[in-house]
Amino acid sequence: MAERRRFKLNPNKVRAWVERNFPDNKPRGGSGWINICNPFDGDSKYKFGINTRSFWVHDFRPSHRRHDGPIIDFVQKYRGYSDEDRAFKEIMETEFNPSLHLQQEEEEEIIEKEVELPPGTKFFDEKNNSTACKMAYNYLVNRRGFDEEMLEKYQIGYTATNIVFPYFEFGVLVYWQTRSTTGKVFDFPKIEQFGVTKSEFLYGFDNVESDTVIIMEAIIDAISVGPDAVAMGGVDLSKRQVKKVRALRPKKVIFAVDRDDAGVERLRKSYDQLKSYAELYYVAPPAYVAKDWNDLLKAGENPRDYIDREKIRLDLKTMISLSNKTFRRSF
Image 1 (cartoon, rainbow, N blue to C red):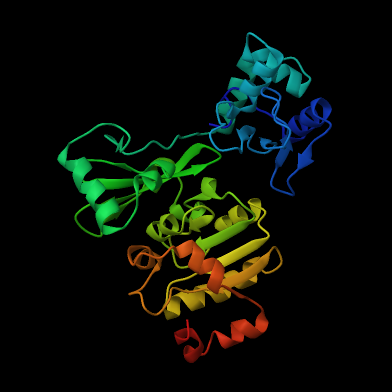
Image 2: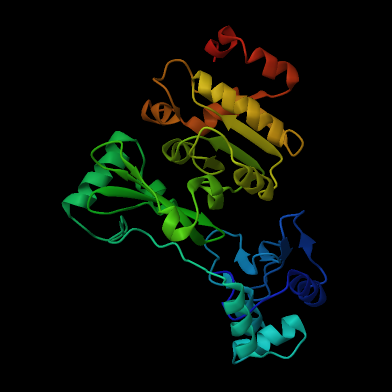
């Protein structure tokens, strides 16, 4: 969780603490993130972020996430405090009464639930010759065309009967989806248990590495395209997903939709939601593949290269043209 349950932080106090201790900082728009230089290892590229809303700190450099965690932990380590209470007191500039905060939390009936991967989830970097491992590996590598680097990069796992696709945001597990290794059967965390649905998240959020975001429908397609591709897992971008795209602060957003009428209708709505925030582009899979972007990968072509090469700029005139089926067939 982003903060200890007994610590009730205030966003304004957190922001003031960051600005007071790191005056040479770079706020990231309205996302709540303030970027600083990591004080622990001499980073000078402002790749270390502190979120004044979720109270989470995150190192955005690949493989540099050992300092990720709640801001309470960060302040405690930064100051060398032996206990968390002193860190909280410094941020809030007040005396700390644990029993009072626990009482207030109980009165507010705050419930925090952590998402955990399905029971028995294992990963491909673990040596395993089980039938479950072989079936999952066969589906992903032989049938979908993925390589072992992809499996590791996206931390794909498996159970006795399913492949597990974890969703991460700033290094934190926020959701997951499974797919059967023997059929097109999906499963998700139960909303009754965790209170969230897939429409709140973007698969691949943590794998965006540039100022471009490629929006796709399916997880398999997002992995096929690679870094910067996210999957919305549905017909339309939800309001929460739109906010997630904006939080990434892209200069370019590419809608890599499926080759069907539903994909074009989806594009029309998404265009209106994001046209004021970034340059928008459109691209569909080529006509010589069966349907989607994974088919292009299996055909031996790099989907990302194709997207970069064939995308077209979206404007009002193009949106009108997209209503013409002849135009769509030309892609």
